[in-house]
Image 1 (cartoon, rainbow, N blue to C red):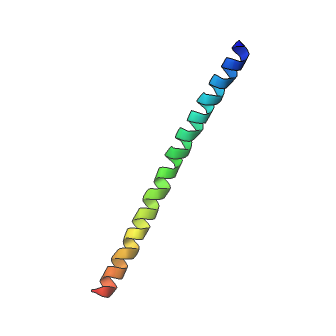
Image 2 (cartoon, rainbow, N blue to C red):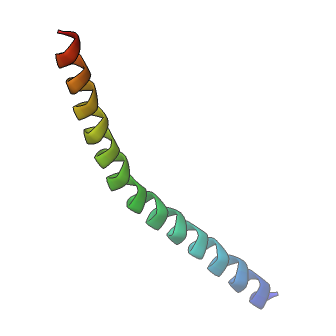
Image 3 (cartoon, rainbow, N blue to C red):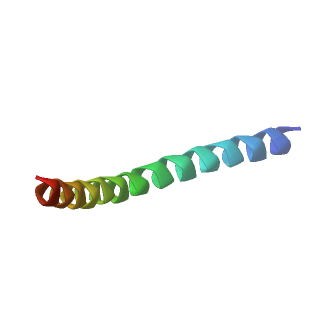
Length: 49
């Protein structure tokens, strides 16, 4: 019984750790894409103006 509880606790901790790591790594990519997109849209606005 204790071994099963210990395994499920480890699995939960591992999943939470993976989720936090994944989320932390994905944020800089989004910010870089936003900067690229903003620059592209500013270029379009200059053309239209």
